[in-house]
Amino acid sequence: MYAKRSRSQPQIILLKEGTDTSQGKPQLVSNINACMAVADVVRTTLGPRGMDKLIHDDKGNTTISNDGATIMKLLDIVHPASKILVDIAKSQDSEVGDGTTTVVLLAGEFLKEAKPFIEDGVHPQNIIRSYRTASYLAIEKIKELAVSIEGKSLEEKKSLLAKCAATTLSSKLIGGEKEFFATMVVDAVIAIGNDDRLNMIGIKKVPGGTMRDSFLVDGVAFKKTFSYAGFEQQPKKFVNPKILVLNIELELKSEKENAEIRLSDPLQYQSIVDAEWNIIYDKLDKCVKSGAKVVLSRLAIGDLATQYFADRDIFCAGRVTEEDLLRVAAATGGTVQTTVNNVIDERQVGNERFNIFSGCPSGRTATIVLRGGADQFIEEAERSLHDAIMIVRRALRSSTVVAGGGAIDMEISRYLRQHARTIAGKSQLFINSYAKALEVIPRQLCDNAGFDATDVLNKLRQKHALPSGEGAPYGVDINTGGIADSFANFVWEPAVVKINAINAATEAACLVLSVDETVKNPKSESAQGEAAASAMGGRGRGRGRGMRRR
Image 1 (cartoon, rainbow, N blue to C red):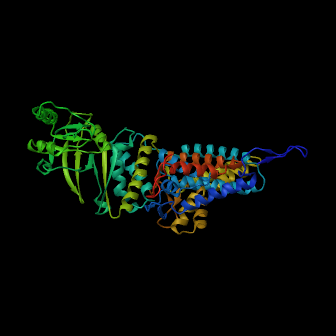
Image 2: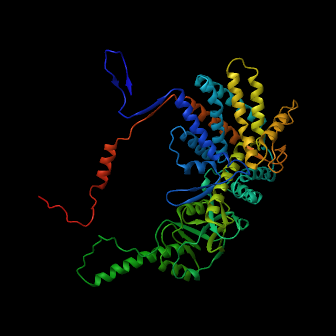
Image 3: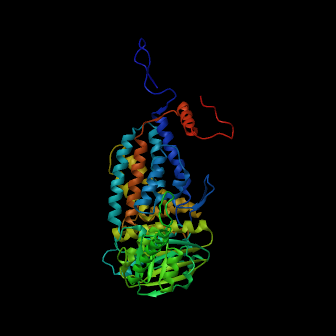
């Protein structure tokens, strides 16, 4: 990049030779186009009739998903401005769990509406200011329209939360069984109570069977670990046992490679061997004396220990994953050598055997065992359930819901259009365009279901414009291709999802609009060459003779 000071003075070099810089209106329009292209990728996945994407990566892994955040992560986008949309999809996923496609679509649509103004020479800061005002007004309107589910009985609350989970699951691959899974998700979330740790709900995948074969364990379930001879002689069902949770090995340990023992008398060797056996037997005796009937360890339980426990009617499992062990500890109300009242059972699930701990009084944990045909299908089912679990947790905490199916978007759009008329100056146009952008959600729901979007949107506009306000909960009816009261049809979503989506999408759009110059530093080929050379240093190349040392 060069800067000319005057004719008599030489050029001043500011940036490295080969640096690519683009600034002004063309590069802003270019960034907007890139973001719109990303939004177009996930556009068709929105809603109950949304299509899935099959993504095949360089390692040969195949993923089938219609979860916005998963698709964005797997796309491996390199355009710097478009990466902002990937980040907002990830933040929406981690913050509320659902609405990842919505947030990307809204951000893309806000930028699309701003593009003509930018091309006409409007300063981006004017648009940013109006967008932020519109966002604040929209969020206040959502809070005003939201319906609280506080003060309801547990059964009523469960029913309302199941409706929220079903709305989330309706757009997923397992949408056909949404009622079945929604109830399961609500029971799992209520089982962990106020515990914020999501890993207290375990999801185990077992190929085979149908989706309906999936079940919820009110406690902990994990796959039977590797076991030695003697395991089959152990009892497989206990009622009210003591459970011992360990983080030690219960097997004869081989000496380290560099261990060395010097003996002056051969008879001393036997005492060393005896000491090794005494150590392991001492550990096992202490386990038995504790009165425990179930012994679990994160590390190995060897064949000697397995047989020893089998002779004493004690169940043992070694190499239990740390995550499962922590959940057992949480369910039983302790950490190590815990006394609890519960039931342990071993059950066959498909081709796998599962150890199941249920009826734990401190039980702040639950496990969903998922069944299904193909591995990719079960993976997508797990992602769908994760979204539903997040939604139910959020709804339980924030306790307010709004009408789904594009109803809330149309109502905010109408409100902002009405508000824009009261404003003098250019910002009226910008707030109007923001209101128009919000209509992308019901429009896309219609497009993905194969309905006439123009016809449905006209009906919705007419309904929402009624002075009485009775049309506020009306959204797209996916089943008939008309419009229907989303509240009456139980198409609900937590208010926090919409608030977060509008906030994140507006911020992303404003961020892209505020960039007026993009600078790409050149890749130094010489530096790359040196790095490659240093990486090869020390590696042999072929079987040729080495160079003679001088």
